[in-house]
Length: 220
Length: 267
Image (cartoon, rainbow over all chains, first blue to last red):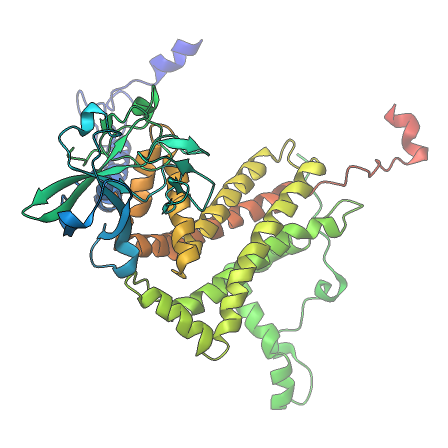
């Protein structure tokens, strides 16, 4: 008996004897007003919600800026050990925007990796590949050691011990006259293959490079 | 359909108070002033019917065996209220400026402002107290089986409140902007980044860019003082509504109270 009710409730407003109905009209005024009011509400809400969301999410897609920063003269670095230099990661916020890089001259005897063959200097980021604490170069042990969770890296920045999932990040270097300049950061996997810069804690070996995609705004 | 009996009203509230024009006596101003409070409450209640809601909320029936373990929810709420009030006053002095202003404003509150160290201490230690109380309250609910039907939704709201409290602690930790705050936030954001697929985007969203930058601190400050308190207050309202609506559970060791003379009809 379900369709007897459907027959009784015709879709035409005229058949239903509604005041002001005319031939062929199916949408009742109540429906029209309802749809208009709710549609207006949705438009009004979207008008402030979508721009606000885009405003908050925009930094994720912003292109990272490339800056080259002079860190010293080429003659001040050697092949044997690392020298720390202070670099500016983010200008205008004082000490909070500073970081440390460790630099030495490339030594063909140990830096045998093919990706390094055109570089004259090795610049290692002090940002631990585990969770971003600052590692320091310990001369006596010839290791980078992280104070937070015990990450240890060798002379090439490869993990020796502790929780880090990949080697220490590096910086592009270039020589300008007799000045050494540091450029953008890049990440490497355990074979020292280069990737666009990743956050600490993200492995780059095997499936890791797909589970942790590159930043949309990264230009490397 | 039978109606439930109206909730019991305590003695002092049973007799309706005399209206101001019914007050017997000398008509002395003191006589009127005595009933001033009553007439103001009456005036509001006539226009809002709030007394019904208040009675519904305050004079609920609670099961036999209700004890001090049942107070941790209220304790957590008062911890939140304390955080809200002290937080508002701290916001009058705080400056989310990463180039040194944030640290300096906190130093000023701690060392120079009258009772500043006390109010900041309340906020700082109160945050730990709130987290501890949330977990005790959660444990009580779990071990008393108070999350079971029909209270599952209240458990879910409680879990969301727990997560929001954690986000509150995380965003608040950066604000003093000393070495500990800075490095703890770096580590915390990078822990977020280790989530597969969405992790890198989440950390960029939190930092407002690829690196810790000029907007990160104000972003954390806005989340900490504008977004989260509103969300937590609204969810506490929903949580409390469901508590009053569904009632509380008896402790698990409480046995059903069976009247012996009725036992035959029950079988």
